[in-house]
Length: 56
Image 1 (cartoon, rainbow, N blue to C red):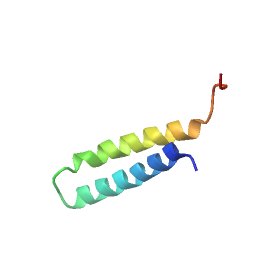
Image 2 (cartoon, rainbow, N blue to C red):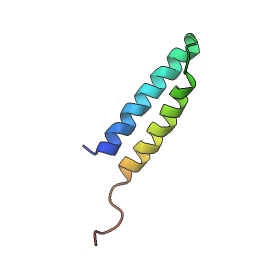
Image 3 (cartoon, rainbow, N blue to C red):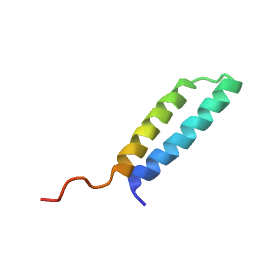
Image 4 (cartoon, rainbow, N blue to C red):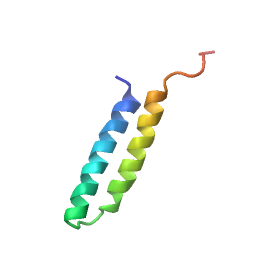
């Protein structure tokens, strides 16, 4: 499995779970869940893009 794809999936799941918990119960640092979610979605997109250029 692609490492970037796996990292993106993990960050997306953790960020989403942190956001859902943060809506129900306020806790310190809950804004970082949105950051993790955004970074996770970005890494998912990069991980799914595949090889676009030939190796030199």
